[in-house]
Image (cartoon, rainbow, N blue to C red):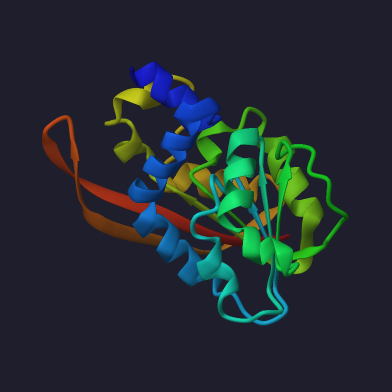
Length: 214
């Protein structure tokens, strides 16, 4: 069961993938809302989200101003399809687009996004250097990159993370960014309401790391 869940969290597929996407929306509400607050969408922003899941929270990103343009990129075809279904009106008006692609080879021109963010995707990066190089490439020189994750000491408590998850402490994720062409400008540590795991209430938290290109 844990291994199957880990596989679906990495790359949702089929009907079970649709259910996983809906489950992630519930479990990731607080982490997503606080990331959007840091993202601070403003008029004329061009925003890229990598690993956006089913795009449930996209309306909260584009609502502040009709000139905001958002693109979501994911390598799960079922998540792209669900995101397009959920956000059909915004796609029709040209404000939103979703793309099926791997994070190491994204089909975008250089320096086209002034804000790039990703939530809970770093655990699955098979080649972190390649991913970060690609994010640097598409990010505007004055742009902002936001990487949000749950810290290692928390992730280690989940039974499914033993199946292919790469976990990071605050220090490790900051070092990874700094070693790969980014300057960390801010690290936020956020507490969430306690969560029940295997009949036990555990504390939940997340890290929001804000960076810019060196």
